[in-house]
Amino acid sequence: MTRKTNSRIPKYRRHKRPRSKDQAFVELDGERHYLGPYDSPESREAYHRLLAEWSANGQQTPSKADDVRVVEVCAKFWDHADVYYRRPDGTPTILERVKITMKPMRELYGRTRAAEFGPNALRAVRQVWIDAGLARQTINDRTGMAKLIFKWAASHELIPGSVYHALRTVEGLRKGRSAARETEPVKPVSQAHIAAIELHVSRQIWGLVQLQLLTGARSGELVIMRPVDLDTSS
Image (cartoon, rainbow, N blue to C red):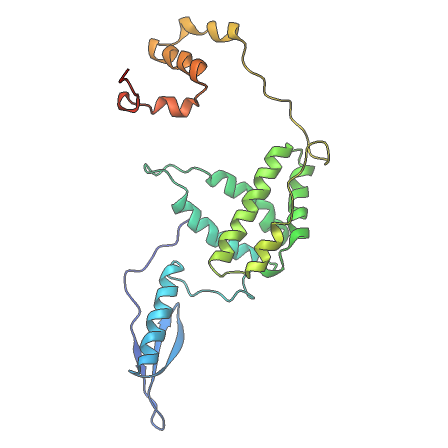
């Protein structure tokens, strides 16, 4: 679930010290962060910088890269994906792929430091999918999604960039060179089978079928096509 944000902005505050200079601080997630001498330019700059980082991190204090666990990377990426990977009407796009990719990552390496999740760990996760009998292309797709999760984590400084770059060295499974299941090639539908549906669909659907046969366009492209998209000048 997406974490709710707080509309109240943490204040720049003063900690009085009787025998030394008063210190500025800001309290984030119940923890005090001291910024330097109160009302100094340096403390004001530190306050705005820390507040910006806190806001950009979903109103959470950024974790140190050495302390972040794989389960935390998954949780933070899920919050990001739940917002980013949605259509304008709110329906999700790749969230199911994200969820099923994360499952063995959490089960095998949830409490592992994310900085220690290397190529061998990714191969171990991939082996789970191989043992489950998934098709090679599906396994490669999920492996790519795992890399995307760590790429995002590196870009948000949750992990060292070297972790993602190391994971990139894991190549996709190649046809006939792994234990992954191969699928039968998808063959075109016979013209006789296409013709057989004409009497069972509307005139509009049959028109789309004929247009797809003539153009090779994807069905998703055809159903959103409008008259204004067509060049009828000649």
